[in-house]
Amino acid sequence: MKTGRIIKSISGVYRVDVDGSYYDTKPRGLFRKNKFSPIVGDVVDFEVENITEGYIHHVHERKNELKRPPVSNIDHLIIVMSAVEPDFSTQLLDRFLVIAHSYHLRPRILVTKKDLTTDSISQNIKHHLSIYEDMGYNTQFIGVDDDIQDVFRAWGPGLAVLSGQSGVGKSTLLNSYFPNLDLETQHISKSLNRGRHTTRHVELFERANGFIADTPGFSALDFDHIQKDEVKHYFLEINEIGEQCKFRNCNHLKEPKCQVKKAIEEGHIAQFRYDHYVQLYNEIANRKERY
Ligand SMILES: Nc1nc2c(ncn2[C@@H]2O[C@H](COP(=O)(O)OP(=O)(O)OP(=O)(O)O)[C@@H](O)[C@H]2O)c(=O)[nH]1
Ligand SMILES: [Mg+2]
Ligand SMILES: [Zn+2]
Image (cartoon, rainbow, N blue to C red):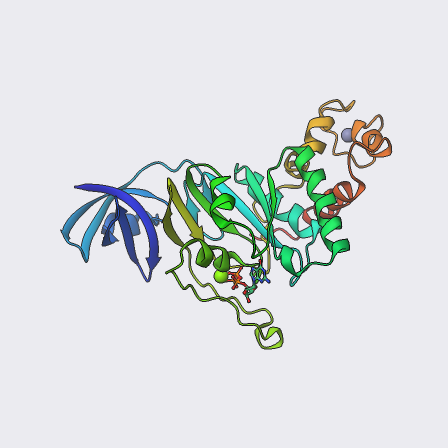
């Protein structure tokens, strides 16, 4: 029996890495019966017939798990946004952050395509990133000229997962880190590729002291697993100041003596963050429950 980490899964075949050697494996029938599927990132025990034929017997307990795309045991979730093409959006960023926190992941923020920005766009992004830094997030703002080794090194060891909208440059980052990788990236012609997702599956690549995962970009975010009363906890500064509200269950909407409202008036919480919170709260409050 060997133990390794699943780095890729295609049509029911799981590729497992054991210290740089790869084995193609399948789960034993037992998993199918229990409706449990291994996912990329899982640490598994498997039996080897030969390198193209192995059987997964056991999946080690997951430290955490992202549902879309399915990846487990994440050490660093890197939320990738581009400065332009597609344009940087704090609304979208806040939504990604909510999803990350809902899975108990502590995300980092990485903004790409700095080389394509004008001074005013660049200033605007830096201004917003400093607000996120104040909330406690690590942020990076990079372009093609930056030293990619430094960018990756900042994350520390372990499994780093790149996640974000289609076209922000996730695969491009990997291609510049691994000169021989040659992952498919979006072509220049934007009109032809609108809404197209270039990367189609999750795959882990070995990097210095860990792994990095490329993932398919997504266009729609799924909040189905989040209840309206939870949302306030996933806006870190609102959560922190909200502990001082008069009512313990204050949702910071129309309740009296709300400290969050006060903090906005005094400039300690950014208005845009609160607006995004209320927007998401209302969306979830108004959604039709599916059974
Ligand atoms: N100028 C510039 N172009 C970039 C940068 N990063 C990415 N690009 C370009 O942006 C386009 C999209 O990059 P991809 O790496 O395919 O984006 P992706 O996030 O992997 O997209 P999906 O796989 O669809 O999720 C490509 O044409 C890249 O060359 C950057 O920092 N500067
Ligand atoms: Mg890609
Ligand atoms: Zn309140």
